[in-house]
Length: 455
Image (cartoon, rainbow, N blue to C red; front, side, top):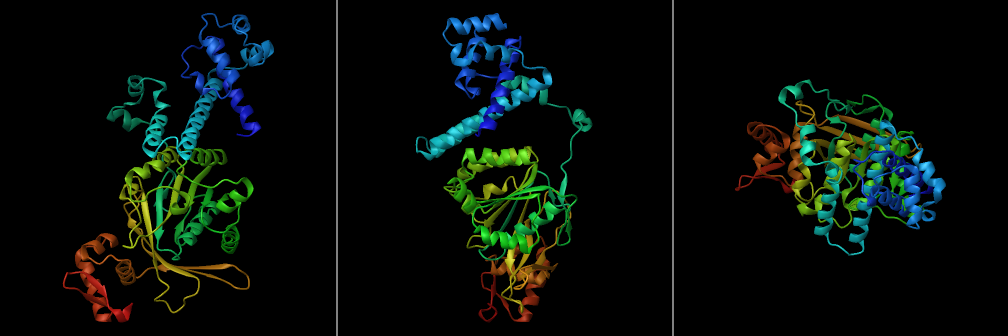
């Protein structure tokens, strides 16, 4: 925390102390919620007094030889006269509790990093911390305030989530883009960031208005990321980059989104800059120490992602495909996902093999629309003279998608039907076309196989 932030936190804490000195006695704070020892001392002294007036508090601190340690009589007078009306107090109290939670989360991260506590204990403490704000009032009171009848729900004034890109991408979404290495995941993530930050288009998909985007890059060298960004003409004030190398060069810090301290910092950055979309590229490089196939490991980031959703900050995570062609790691991470996009390599079968060429398809349809989102084939080529990137896209042919899925390792007819969201009989028709074209056969086990000559 820099000096300016520390001064702000101190001011918020003093407003809360002022309210306590002037008769408020039901505020949901404890001594540990205050960041400095002097403020904790004042809180403890005020909390123990029946008469909390300026003279009584000053005299109590003096008698206990604490007055000079908290800044003297002048500081107590300043605190007592701070504005603590309902609006100012509510804001200050929220800030005090939020900074308290951030400090506690950072401490848990430090203890885990030093080996003082293990993963299980860290998860327990984080879960307890996530319930901290809810525990400020009793659960009975919380339920009394929050339970609504079906009639109340019908009439409840709710703020709808704003659409960000066409009908399938909205505020607060959690989405994945995954593929094998080198297919074009970062290209599509950058195209998405460009469209959202400029209020432009991503292929046939339109944005409604420009929004702030924070792109967290855990893998690319900054010069290459800059070249791609400039080639796409994506440079604008709404698009911010947090690159792992620039961070290390300037601060000596490394990115690890499993750290509560890093999570709080990224959340704070998004909130303060009004970012509506957070792109994490990619999960393998940004989540150090996470065991991909263990469901419990996903809990290191799951609560953070849910917190971002409650703040209506959408998150796009770039990830790798496993050997099977499906997204790598535990299936538990798909529980809270709104949509998943897979990329299939389209370069090897194309005559023009320049640049990046891939097919995008939804392996988990968007929850935001009942309409099927079509697959597209993308072709990005960098001009060697101007360094500008040309972007081509067209609807992907169904047979090409069928072949891409088999190449990715999905070979059972029922599984292919599930991936393509098509009935079984249509998969059989596609298979017949492929057999007639000479590049497919059906094995004795009933699975589809590419012929060697077609690979």
